Image (cartoon, rainbow, N blue to C red; front, side):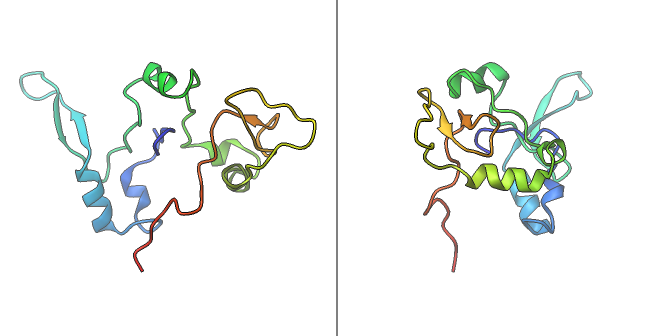
Amino acid sequence: ASCHSLHYIRFRELVGVTHTADEVKEMAKDVDVLDGPNDEGEMFERPGKPYDVLPSPYPNKEAGRAANGGAYPPDLSLMVKARHNGTDYVFALLTGYCEPPAGKEMMPGLHYNPYFPGGAISMPPPLSDGGVEYDD
């Protein structure tokens, strides 16, 4: 994710859902993981492995807030479990952006999504036509 973290999701959990085992191994290898300590007590970086967690998009919460107008994007690992009808909620939230109804004033920097409590969300629409290219 480019904005939200997935602190409790490991690369291996993508096998058979979105990727093959070989794809997951390759994807994990592209990530540098802080590990250790080694025999000298020092931390070191190594290529990621399927059992590692997905990397956070930001090094810390302050960097996340700075990149998002002061709002820290919540971790989405458990969102499906945390919300009533979680999968439906996430789908509706991702696809439900629209123009606000007549008379609904939106503060600057907010977007209308009737599936978000209160209807005003700082996250811009994450999906758009042409946003993904498929190998046909």
